[in-house]
View (cartoon, rainbow, N blue to C red):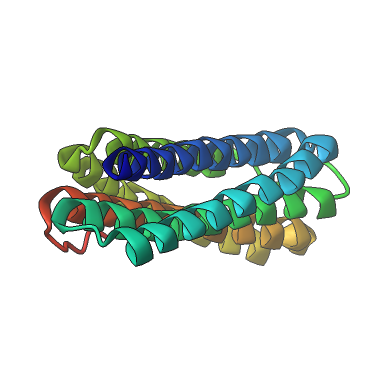
Length: 216
């Protein structure tokens, strides 16, 4: 009976991380869609969803504390528990950045004066990184984790190229400055989401292989 309850708690922990990842990914997708269309209602929905993510993080914290304090897990189970706790923290931060993007949407009063194509491209990569990092966790797939983290190089290159492009636009036309500044913040939020996806991938590799790799 004790062993069965222990296994149930481990399964619960895994499922909470997977569900938390789904909500975080939905928040990111919705925040970018809201940015593209300047849909303030959708932006508000993203902000409201953050409460659910916070609740998941709290549940994961309680579950990990219980397992560590009362069950004395060994080896692979211990890595799963500690990795899950770290992943929950990264997912919560990613969700916060989605909220930050939604807040930008609420600030923009007029139509976009700067094309969003580069930002949408970066967002697509980071969305895939978020989804695949959680998939790697669920499937205990270290190779998928490594491949997902490698995508961050694309994010970084696009970030710096797009940032430079926007700065030059502001230099050429001061009217673009307010819009450009808001979008530069969005760029930064997306870049940080990519970094947190890499953190999740590092946790997955550690969980599966007991190797601590720097994938960022």
